[in-house]
Structures are given as C-alpha cells and as structure tokens.
Image (cartoon, rainbow, N blue to C red; front, top):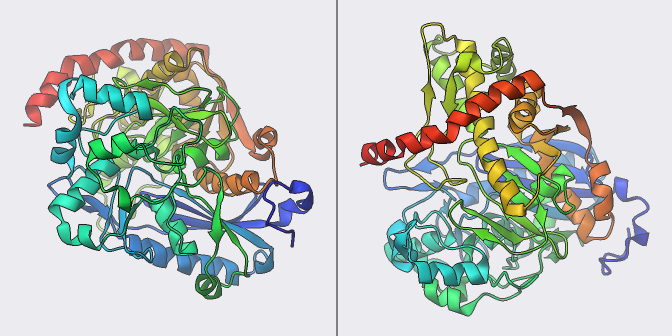
Length: 532
C-alpha cells in the first residue's frame, strides 16, 4: 500500500485503477453507498430510501441517526461481498445535499433531526436579519453580505442561518444540547473520523465565509455577528478537497475496513456532480436533471446575481469557483405526473416504470400538441425567486392525450432549464456548450434529446448518470490524493450518447419558449393571492 502521508505524490499510484473508495452520496431521497475506484469505476452500489417528515409550519426534516445506521449496514454488506478486496480500499468520500443542518453533540451524535434545505421554520428570524423592500431584502444589509460572501441568507429561512436561528430560539432544548451545527456531509465525515470539520465549499450555503478570498479558512466575523448565530458552534474550516483524518478504529472494525483509511472532507452535491460529469475545466457546463435541477460550470471569479438567485461558490480546483443555482422541480415533476396518472390503477398495482412512461411520451410529437406545462410545483428559486409560484398545464383541449401530457411535463422541465440556461450564459458572459447531463432524468435518451433541442445545444448523456455524484465523490478522492489530474477527468467519465438539436424540433420549442416566461409574469399575482 502506498505511503499516504504525502498526498501530492502520485508516483505511487501506478495501480490506481485497483485502489478503491467507500463513497457515499446522501441525497434527499436517501443515501447511495458504493465502492468506486480512484479512477471512477463503480464496482457496486446500493440505494437506501429514507422518509422526510413534513409539517404544516414549514418543517422538512430527516433522521440523521438513521442515515448513519443505513450507511454502515450498506458499507458492511459491500465490503463483506468481497467484490473488491478490503485491503485495497484507501479512502472514504462523502457528498450530498447541502444548505441543511444537523445538530450534534461533541461526539458527532445527532441531538435532533436534520433540517433539510427546504425547511422554512426559521423564516421569521431570517427576515429580522436581512428583510427589506427591494426584492425582499434590505439593500444595505444585502450589499454587505453579497460583497463579502457572494450571497445572502434566504428570507424564507430555508438555509443554515434560518435553521440555526430556529433551533436556538424555538427549540432551545436542542440548541443547548448542540455542540456543533453541521452540514450533512460534514456530519458523516465526523461520524467516520470523530473530527468536527467543515470547508468553504460545504458551508457555501450558509454565506458566512469571506469568499473574496480564494480559499478562506475562517468565518467572516462581521457576517456571523450579523446573522446572530453562535460562532462557537460552527465547525473549524479545512481546505476544500482535503483529508480530514482516518477512519476511527471502532468504525473501521465494525465495517471491516483496514486501518489507516483516509477520509476526505465532505463535498456538496454540486461539487461532486461537476467532477462526476467530467466537466471540470473553465466554462465546461453540466446540467442536473435530478429531483431538483441546476446548471453549473467552473468560473474564474466571484460574482452574484441576487435577483436570479445565482452566485459563484468556492470550487474544487484552485482558482475556480462553481456557478450555483437551483430549480425546485426537475425529475420530481415526472414522478408527480406518473403518480397522478396512476391514481386509477387497481389497488396493489405498482407505479408505472419510468421507461414505460417515457415510451408513452415518445409516442407524442414534439411540442405535445402545443400543450405547455410549467413545472413550478414547489415554487421556484432560479431564475425567479418565488416560493408561491405553482405549476400548471396550459392550452389543453379535448384532443389532448395522456402521451401529450407526459411529454409536456418533460418538455416543461426542459423549457424551465432553458430559462435558467440563458440567465447562466449571461451571468458567465458567453454561450456554453456542450452540456453534460447527469441525474436520474438523464437516464432517459428521450429527455436528453428534448433538452438538446430545447436548449439548442448538444447534450452529452453521461454513462450511469444517476451515479454521477457517487463517481464524483471517488474522483475527488483521486484528485486530492494525487492519483488523477484534472485534465484526465473528461476521459475518465464515459459518455453513452451525444444528442444534437433537431432543427424542426428547435423551431417548435422556440415557439413554446416565447410564451414560457410570459406565463409566469401573467400569473404571479394570481399565485400571490391564492397563497394567502
């Protein structure tokens, strides 16, 4: 086994394709756990669903203790399977959801549930910090936040500042028991190592670091004070893409890992998605068609568009940041319409498989008979920030078929992405092409083809797109340990197909997109009135 005390010495990695990473991708739907080589080859993977507890007051929580139990059980099954020799496992790397908060004690054990990125119970406290008359913000306060960090706390409370303020003020028993408030990936890293640590990347959603610096390793005292959160409960910062420590001896023994396995600093899903897509060099874009959706690329400077909820955050590679944004409904819109259409199936019948659903959509023509679907089922963040926005079908007729409706949902999600893509391209100052597609929605060749024509850009469908984040977590370990270089990443991530715009379909989608933003403008006051 190579000497891992020198992370930059990759001359020892001649056998890198046979060195393995225990990788964890903690999505909102539950963790994926797998064994992945330092070069991104996936030996095995298991997905473990977890429930979300939703409440009428804006609660959205999950049991972080359950995450750990499931991850340990899955890791033990993978290691016991001997699909790879345990002694060839050299690292643990965790990625997943961010802008969520796990309160833990001094040993890293949860003292309360994780508040997810969609939990808004801290909204009243956040608005006391930042709210005002300009797009919901106080201009001077917002300017200070944006100038230092690149963003500002959400007035909805759906971010770590809102979460921490809620726990400290509304659930004081949890607040008193909490030694640290950790992002989910930092929580998992602490469970593996016993070390409380965060990074500028993992804390990007808290907007508490001075991101004018390339890699700040301290919190911005002025912003922490303005937020009103306890500085003593923020985990010490480590460099992004660094080694936090080694797996605790008791955890290693429980899982069947050899001694000395190193643990990477946790990374948000945005960062592992970027690496797992292979698009890591400046202005190389990727698009995620996951539960939610986003468009990102590495970008060389700090920049913010507060109106469109877009900013750059600390990245993985030196000198590069990542464009961050989010659309609240991506692949979940297709799941929603499936569940609606399945409502008349006999009791006990399983849900329609997605390949059958997309085959139905493929039987409809491009444009879905001019039916237009707006996918704002959970409100929207980018390129408009309106949590009261709601989805809908438009231009339905007696001739509209099920196939039209399903295809219009897929097209509506893509049209929403086009709205965001044009904003991203203005933000970075140049057209972006080709787009690498990842996430569950990118498993569908039809959806990737729709995206290519809607965006009028080539779309490269990454192989095993649902596992891009898991692959990315392992590749980040490979980068950190010096086993691989950034220039090789595009070739280490295979592409199963390249989809090019169809000129006839582009013309249809251009016509539909001309109406798409106008539908929001025409309905936004209706959304506001109906939300009361």
